Image 1 (cartoon, helix red, strand yellow):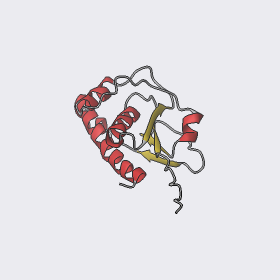
Image 2 (cartoon, one colour):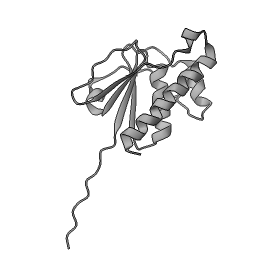
Image 3 (cartoon, rainbow, N blue to C red):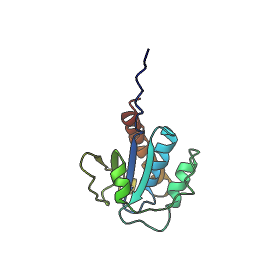
Image 4 (cartoon, one colour):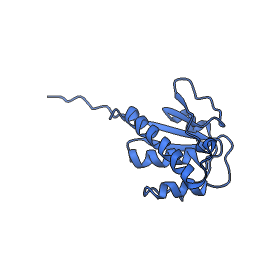
Length: 144
């Protein structure tokens, strides 16, 4: 009796992009890593990377037990773009074209500052908006 080899499924991958890669894209990446573990390869980058992470973004994830203190802003590279299955652009500041056949979405995230909400209250609202979107994306990428 012969057995057919089982195909190895490629791990789905996603790149989260914002302009500076210090806030929203780092939030999304941290939230996806927390939700997916090893089930999804997660990258984050910026179209115009800043020099450091947004301290409020870091703190808002720390409140959920997610530690991104080892992260740093990184530029978008062709290597990562050619690797990932999905590119998610957070906010309207960053603009990016994805390679042919790569899923591209723009998430116009909640911006509480437009309603006069600032500081950590603003960051928690942004985080929670991104968290809901990440959970939906995780389910789509993994079929769960």
